[in-house]
Length: 92
Image (cartoon, rainbow, N blue to C red; front, side, top):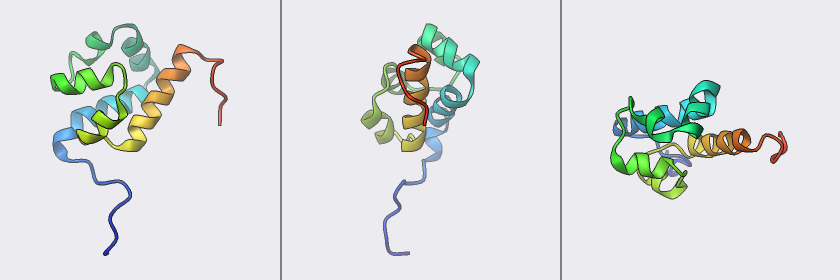
């Protein structure tokens, strides 16, 4: 395969970061905890200070630069926006 991948495979070092993004996207209870207390929700996760800073608020470029999968960044941000304002975004 000579073409560059559209999404690079996330490095193993970014596992905790991607796991957090996945939890925000997929686990309503975690998402609610994250909205109410981001630092508390992230505390049990093995995240660097830079990752915690980039997660709250979501900094797409910083997260992707740390190895976060762009899809998870997008979906986690969308879930947070929907949770903050359920009527603010149309469902698609």
